[in-house]
Image (cartoon, rainbow over all chains, first blue to last red; front, side, top):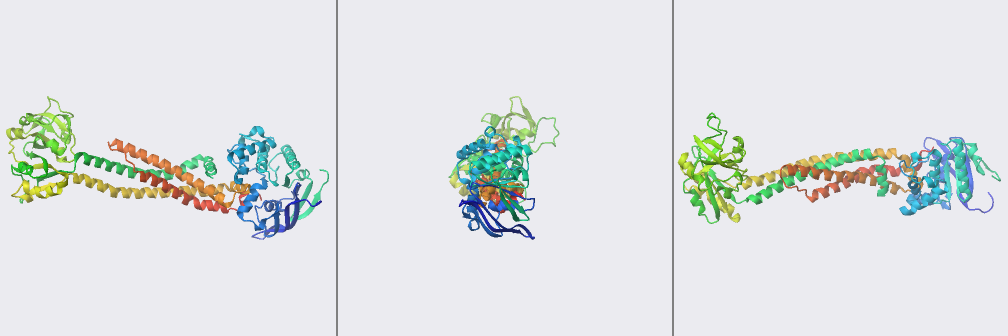
Length: 231
Length: 386
């Protein structure tokens, strides 16, 4: 990585074992700087989802050091980790996980639910976030009234409504057709251009191709880390 | 947090209704039981207040030989001379004068109605009220005019008194000039046909000796008068006189209610417990079903404590909903039951407040374990993105 850029994600010697002898991550070292857009690619079982969970503080490593946005995760309590997740990290999941029967506006407003903002503030910021992802006209629609692509966009809006430092995206196009997937990746690139640090987990090379830096994983280890210039 | 808890419930309305129903029924049962018994006691107290507790009855006991005793002729006057006595009246039993609807009825079917000679001041003393027609007055007391007690009128198939209405009494026709309402303090009058004192002597062979003496006394002196009444009424044979205070029977009824109420309250508490288990069951299943939502909330930054609070709030809302519905239902049942019987509707505030408080406790207990389980769920397990 070039220069003295600020590190958002620092993993040192991170391992994650599960009882029963399964090793999801094996002694991983990784640095991600502010403003980067990184793809973590690999077949299923390669440990990339575990990597996402560890980066998002949803999971603690069995050994190794994890520093997210300057905070050493191991030393943080559950409350502090939750605060970190509420304000500095945004998640987008493969299956959207939107609340059924709830309008898009409120779904996105939930992204700020645990930050202490008032209901009005949450809704205002949610409306802006939905416009940013191109769904300003769909504020009152419920998830079942939205297409798959629109649902994922709503989920993205929820993830960025709090303007997090780090956006973690898990298989964003996994549940979508290729055309929708492409427009989604373009949205993510736009968000990145606006300054968000984005990490995308995927097993599809096509998706990974959108991203300037590609970290390849296999059997819990980082096997390659390429940056393509000019993407 | 209440908003979030409320959202969880709104998504599955049928389940909410079914779970809250258990608690509602338990609370409704308890409220109705207490409400109905309190209303009944309120009615009894109202009755006691209206009728007064200062009526004493001196009636015939049995003689040494087992016959019904009679009282000396001067008994009424003697009682009237006791200091704290306010008013006195009496009835005399006419054992041989049987009552029939008409002269065509076989002699054996007299219907259990007693014929009594009554003083004209009797209704004031015993608190009797006229249902139809009039009571005996000084004029009609001398002629074959009869007033029927409430049950006697019913047995004879008579709805209301009419000038041309006659019954066959003691071998002759008597005109029904009036009927009475039921007399709570002198129930023996309900199944009686009452004729005037002089009419009894003139037409039915009455010897003028009273059988039962009724007296109203100064309320503070009731027990004192009670102790001397037997001796006053029949100085020669005081042990042949039975003195009673009719309002005691009503008061005893009110007291018996309390024990019965306690029993039913216990049953209601069992129903409540079952309702609480229903809520706990719903919450446990809810937590299992919503693992993804829990994981999502954790990823949005919810602490374990906030997850716990959310599910606890849901359980509490569920219970309080049930409790509120139960109080309304129980009060409604009490109101219907009481008004059907002509009682005032009384639901003590403590049972309503206690009902709601009980549901809060039950909700908290039922929701505690599921809430703790929800909070302990690891985010990765919950989201199962692996």
